[in-house]
Image (cartoon, rainbow, N blue to C red):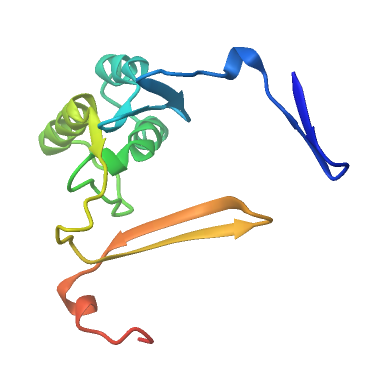
Length: 148
């Protein structure tokens, strides 16, 4: 099926990709619902079965998966540049897996409520996103001027 409007462009729609009157839709590994955005249950199964990493490459692989869903996890960890696995790391790993599994819905923003202070940006080229940045501000940075 194709729709054309004048001679400037053509819009193509694949009927197998069109969904009308549905309560949820899958988009980029998430499910968009009327209540908000939810994680994919297939990804949750992957997280549940993920083994404890024993090398730096394996921890990076898990953090790559977890990083994709970090917006669903309050207090998501940051990297410190070192790799030393111990009992605390095992607890943190299990805690992160539990957070990924239980983070089922990302709520829609309510502009009437206050939020923590942070910075967000998107790099765009030709109307398409290239990269995103989202960072909370420390107390020190909250009192700085915008140009600092």
